[in-house]
Length: 468
Image 1 (tube, rainbow, N blue to C red):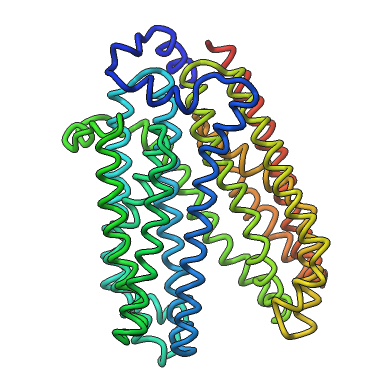
Image 2 (cartoon, rainbow, N blue to C red):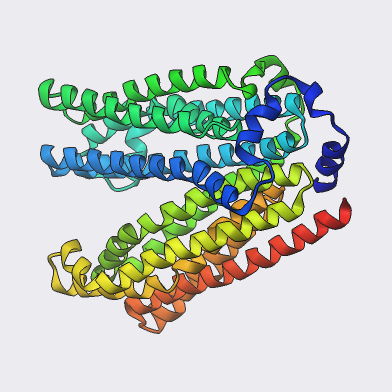
């Protein structure tokens, strides 16, 4: 793959592919000086980070508003959000796979192929959304009962899930279109539209829930309306970009092999991760209620540091993909190591903050002294893993951008099924390691994953240089 893109980049007269392609991309990801590399990384990663914060804030606001309505409402909203997280993971994986492929095609000057891939990305996301929507709408009650929803919360949970199922196509479009616009060199538009959608959603929410007294249904309809507006705005924005020239018939009739080679392993990785996390968390329940509560609370707090890693990984996909497509492997390597240094610095700083302020954070997280102490210890243990988490996330994105979408899948399978689950069994259930064992296993997974992905990227880079 690297050889194919590299040779085409060397032979292609990009100017003949169509006006605006070079200009749109050159403003974002051309070979640059060290300072400009840093600027372009923040140009791509900054909006992604804010969008993720807004998404997390939206979930928190839903739970907060549900808490004002009653305990049953909180249970219904919380469980449905867990289900929707699986859908979001699939949409994100499809978008990441498309971004990795489009970035390499753009680097090689293959405008028409990039447009076809953009169309396939949108069609695949909408197809997955329709499937999830049908399942969510028709099997809402059965799914919630399977998850153990109490009878009192079932009617509200069913209504909430069925209404939100209607918005899955809009959510899939927003995810796919935002990623495509970033590939087209426009990271600002998805950011501004994302902010506008969240503000609009708050206005709808206030009117429907507190003025109209629609309850949990009002929360869901506010989301549907806001995401509909956001999807429409992003469609208009993409049509104005150089990636907006795709046609549905051409996208359907062209070969999907490259798209699925990139996207299928990423979708599988997200699903494997979600299933593994469910089993992993279920095993921790048997370690003890206090340990499980502390694990959830500490994990929720430390997850904010992941947002920086995910944002830098999103930048790595596009930047490395473009440089590999252009056969500028040295520039790709410089981007990757700069991204890794940034990730280690940012997440290492956040880990240090967790370690230093853990004794204050613990009591704020839980009024139960035992749980608060366990949260404090958990954050201090997790602090040491932050640099390795940064490297594993960024190298996974770099490998995906370079065309290797399977290594991150293999590392996830090994991490969940060969390290975490056996580790919890031997250290915690059999060895009575408690919360310490939980976080030691978690840290070991990320250390080994960072080492594996670093070696894989070095090997992949050498192979690409040799083939060209």
